Length: 81
Image (cartoon, rainbow, N blue to C red; front, side):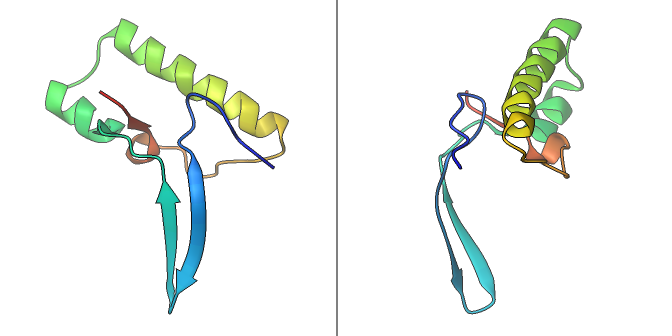
């Protein structure tokens, strides 16, 4: 099952090394959304609306394919600059 969407970071490979799970993923150079919110001391309504729209579109695709995120929070939203 593929989750190809412009608002979902690609997972290229996953494997186990000893007791660690290693994920090879697309690089998002902007970091975590939580850091952006802290750095800017909040977001404007327009910025927040655009981000929520993108997250909603990504989750719509996931849910349509039977995938549930279960840990959606600012720390798990990555972005590109």
